[in-house]
Image (cartoon, rainbow, N blue to C red):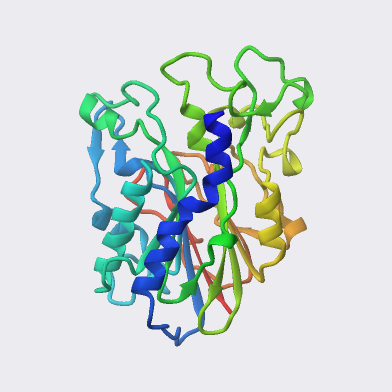
Length: 335
């Protein structure tokens, strides 16, 4: 019953961000170059897992400096412009998302609240034990995980009714035969992890989307954030008996699809935990994937799909120095 109530109220999780946009975004900022700057990254709760089993905590400002790029794909230069949308995976909840958003505001000299935050779960329950950190204190920082969209209230507006309900990823529950996808279920109770330690792990894969409007032009912009489970690497699942779009495990929720269909520019950022997903996977929605380099070790498991006029990138839309276990992807979209 609690899960049902949270589902029904999920759009309200964006309300604080929308309210903040009203307070902090009274001045509409004209985008002189008419470019929408978008990034996608699994920020790993701002705690990096090192190869020796230790972990390192990363500050929000340091992570942002390592990810945001100028028109040449370089970080840390005077040419880095304030982004419009950050699609992120693995934040602890509203608290961390809004703190990160305020750090982004401060980086560009804007007042707190200039960036809003939408999360799939405001305060997800903890799961797991050490999270592969030799320091339990750092492992504890990774126990709460949800997905978020950070947006620039100076350039974009958002109505509460334009925030989707969350939707669940699919998975193959351990011990179940795949059988060409027949064994797939939605990754949520009663088909989630049965053990108490990982009981709430499924919430890290809840997706959320929103439809923004460019203040200057009225252009509609759809953005979605997704994080698929590790099981998706070997067995693509998107729901009950469903292998997802092009057998990738990717799917969009019903009201997210409605928001997408009503949008001119469309952006989907995903940690898919799966290699080999083609750039044409979301072509049915008019979208193309950008970035071909590995994003997690030697594997490419993170994806950015866009419908819009994406500018060429000298670094293949992939930011090599990102301070995370995942490299960030980006697209600069003319509109």
